Length: 229
Ligand SMILES: NC(=O)c1ccc[n+]([C@@H]2O[C@H](COP(=O)([O-])OP(=O)(O)OC[C@H]3O[C@@H](n4cnc5c(N)ncnc54)[C@H](OP(=O)(O)O)[C@@H]3O)[C@@H](O)[C@H]2O)c1
Image (cartoon, rainbow, N blue to C red; front, side, top):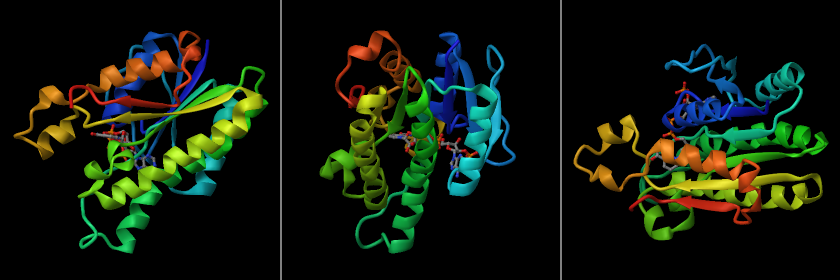
C-alpha cells in the first residue's frame, strides 16, 4: 500500500483529495492545524497529525515523526493556502509577508523534509504543489497582488526541485486551478456563474492520475485545471 501525505486536508480541495486517494487504496496521512479534527467522515481510517505549518521547526518535528511512523512517503500533496484581494494601493508589506507565509512557506517547510526523505527512497516520490492562475497571468493578478506574488514562488520552487530530483526520481508538479467550486467561494461570490468553476473532485482525480504509475509519462510539470473559465 502506498502512502500519501496531504496538508490542508481540512479544506475543500483537501477533502476531495483525501476521498480520492482513499478510493485508490492509499494509506492517507493528513496534517491539520493545531487542535483541529477532520470535519468529514472517511471511508477508511486516516492517520492524523496536527501542526502549524507556518512554523518551520514544528513542521520538521512532525514530519520526522510521520516518517518514523510510516517509513515512506510516496506522494505528498501540499495544499495549504489562502486568498486575499488588494491592488498596489491597498497591499502593504505586512499583507505580502502574510500571504508568503501562508502560501509559500507552508509548502516550502513541508517540501524540505519530504524531498529529503523521497530522495532516499528507492522509488523516489511525487510532490504536488498548488499554484494559482493570477501567479501566471498578470491580468488575473491585477486585484490580488499579494496572493499572486506569494504563489509565484511555488512555481520556481517546483522547477528547482525538479532539477535537483532528476537523479533521485523525485518529481514535483504544480496544479493550477482557476476558481474552485467550494462552499467558501459560493458564499463570497453569490452571483457568480458557478457552472464555470472547477470541482474539487475533478482536481483530485487529476492529481491522483498524475501521481500514479499511469501518469508517469506526463512531462508537463505545470498542470492547469481551469474548467470552463
Ligand atoms: N479555492 C480556490 O478557488 C482556489 C483557487 C486556486 C488555488 N487554490 C489553492 O488551492 C489550495 C486549497 O484551496 P482550498 O480552497 O481547499 O483552501 P481551504 O478550504 O481554505 O483550505 C486550506 C486548508 O489549509 C489549512 N491551513 C491553513 N493554514 C495552516 C497552517 N498554518 N498549518 C496547517 N494547516 C493550515 C486550513 O486549516 P484550518 O482552517 O484548520 O487552519 C485549511 O484546512 C490552496 O493552496 C489555495 O490557495 C484555491
